[in-house]
Image (cartoon, rainbow, N blue to C red; front, top):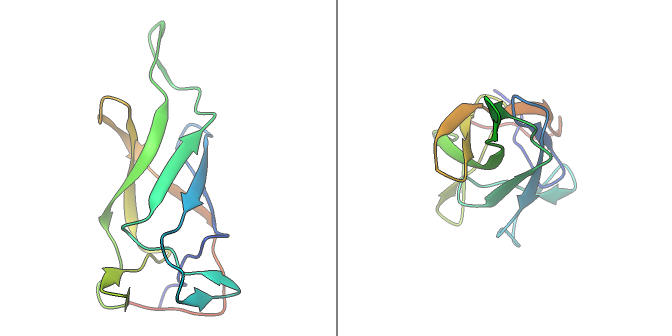
Length: 109
C-alpha cells in the first residue's frame, strides 16, 4: 500500500515550482501532520514555464485520482499513487504533479 500524503509532504510541478498544501483537515493526522485530502487547496509558486515568450506558470493542482478507499470526513485522502494535474490560470493541464516526499508511517488505498 502506498504512503498517505500529509500537509508536510513535498510536491512540485513538472517545471520545478513548489506546491503549498493548504489543508482543510483539522481532525486526522498521519505521520505528525494533517492528512492531505483531494478537496484541499494546492497552490503552486515559482513555476517558470513559458509557452514561447508568454509566461504560463502552473498555479494549482487538480487531483484526478485520489485514494480509492481511504477517506477523512468523507473526503478521499491522497497517496504516493494518487494522480494530480498541475494547471495554469487558464485551467490548461501542464503535466502531472511530482510527489517528492511523503510521510512513511501510514499507508492506504
